Length: 159
Length: 159
Length: 159
Length: 159
Image 1 (tube, rainbow over the protein chains, first blue to last red):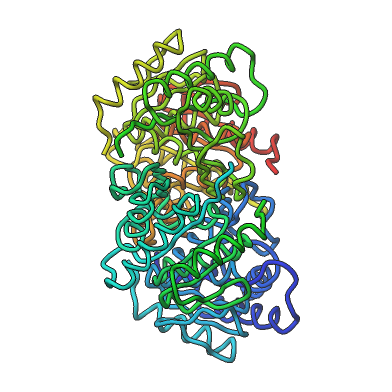
Image 2 (cartoon, each protein chain N blue to C red):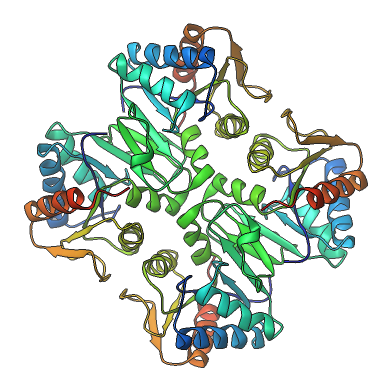
């Protein structure tokens, strides 16, 4: 496999400029570190993060809830259309060596919980849903989020 | 459909006697109120709740992660084997008019988050995972949990 | 578990009067034999079969593709809303000790294939999709379909 | 999105040298035509096709049934671990603009049926499961399979 895959979760609709900025920076930094960005493939935080990654020359994978690959944002390089609705949140959580949540609501909360169920390390940035527990760490900046996610991913070797 | 369906979530492995007692009482009270109990179909809290419901003459539905109906606990009356792993947590959350969590870990946390994503009311009993937010209410007794879940379910009419 | 569960698959939209008659008779005969009918929960053949079962006093389980239990036909007694789209076809196939297809198109074809993947016996009635192979048997009447499905289910003991 | 994505389906276990040769050639030709290869990510035909694509410099996406990305064959460049078992067959079918089946059993048959349910064109090579119907075309060589799949994909613009 080689390059680590890091999942980025967050709201799919309108997001604040601050969350969009954080997500774009997370995407950019992941690309600069050679990581592949995995996300839910839609708008909002997912699109901002994918844009950041692509603009920095990184690879992006979008895992969509619907049956049509055409629903992916233009910044998604490789599209998986699951046709499984919110059940695709499990695939987003499982496909990353770590998960970074940038803000987010109940969908993001479910991805955090599923990631932890699968023992994936989770880093939360920009507030995020009120889910707490072992393996969930909160940080203040995109740079901290990316460094911590990559470090935790390297240490955990999810099998 | 008629009878309300209430989902009960909680740990599937060994549980404390206190959680098992609470879950059994939740199952019994749901049955006495004419509700159908929905759960993940396995052991622990799921089995205790299903046992309480069946012993009181109620109906139970178990939604299993695996492909084999034979994995259901003996207290499951109607078995759905999804073959979809933890993605079945979405079905557990969606199939109830409300969700009652009795303790639980990350799997339960994901069911709470998915239930809220689908606007299902959630009642948490016996501690439960550290997930907070609008629509999640904590109670102290099985009787409170069942009354509140049925009241919230009646008020929300999930469509 | 006790009672066998038999899955019935077929088109969900408009169906011919002949297919509806066959499906209703399959449902009625399954109920008379004490089997629980499992289906996709929607209209067409699924609804006709569930109606036949319920009118004869049998139990029915509907496994819906969507997130809302309210989408189930009125003849569904126990509703599972998977929220997983066509991925729920796997649950329909896995939850029966055998599968009876009554006519049907590509969705039914996928349920037949998934049932065989899981070693469930398949009986096809009323034409049905052009899927052939070991473990798929074609019959001419609802009575033959029900007898053969119950016999094959009893012989295969899916685990 | 740009590059077309073509799904390749087939048996995951031991396959005949002839099927492996056909799958490798399909992968190579897809890469030479600039298409991204999508598959189930495991061994057998999936691995042979992914190998052909990667050795020719093409991109590959593997959509795994399990929760661990580490289960992907070494020829998978981008891994999606769905954790959803055979329900991931829907994602394999949905994520391609067309599906090429190279031999295969019941799993492949389910992917063909699901692809047709979603109106994706299907090309069958090397025998393949006994599933017939509109939109399924059989060819004799890897070159024919790739040309036909790309032509049908371009003509169908799945949305």
